[in-house]
Image 1 (cartoon, rainbow, N blue to C red):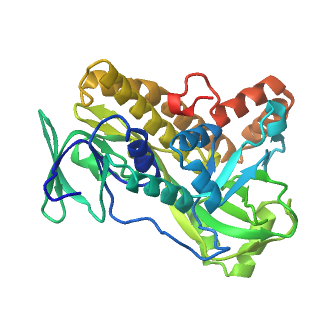
Image 2: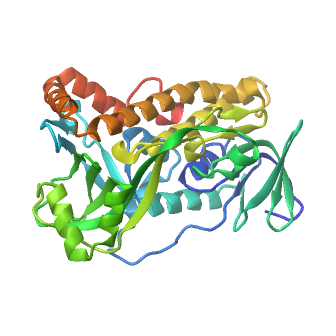
Length: 405
């Protein structure tokens, strides 16, 4: 940003995946845009090293990234398609199998490292004339005015925005400074993320087993390894994090019922506290929240960032519509189109994941039998399975324009 420019049409606080995708999506709307981010993404990393943080990208997210012209760059950096999904229950039996061939699709999605998506989007922002990157930079305060927002940066500078977009994560400072409350609760669980090497081929299949203490997911990587997301109650998570590599590998293999043979831990582990959180409103005059700043979800279906990309695409569509109709891009007429399109879908997904967590996280005999029966019945109901897969892929007709076929 040149020193002389201190006023923008749109200022995005948070240049992570969702914030960067939104900025890229509005780069051609004739607006002046600033993105505030505390640090640049990694530019390089050692060959063969897999980041602990990976995503299961849906087809809708893939389409968004294709239309933002970053998908080929992400492909260069490394993607791992998964073609099937196998889910089974530790208590009470029952399983369900999803296969992309049943939909006539090449795959059900892709496992991609967060840093690959982040870098590809950041490079797109760097090449966009309309986008000014303020990095490293952070905000300390926000003053909402009739004309928009005035942001105070940590270095003492101030900038003004007609529309302020909070894309700064589940602990959003934008949301807090705007006084927007959230509802939700801690799960008293932690997600342990790691990489493991299975003795047997993963079959390009995402494996998920529901345990009473939390679900275990094995996500297939292109080099034959699996990315692990093991959600466990706090006490169990502490035990798992305290184990040495061999003991953890044994516990991991047992938890997966050795479906892929012995699973050997490959590299470090990290754990992340889990909670459900939903902002009571996504928009105020001159302000919109997207991604985790608006909603945080249990990771058992891997939908968090996919929801965030849909938020970014829908808010971009709302601004496009507002400009086409001669409306104020920061006015409620414009940005409520975004909230109406996304809040209900996000609420439904948060509720569904919470229900699954509670249903499969109980070892009560009656519930165990019920969920085992439910999985067996669902596995045999082809139309229901197709509907579930279509929804997970993001194939619905009500998707934002960037995500449609």
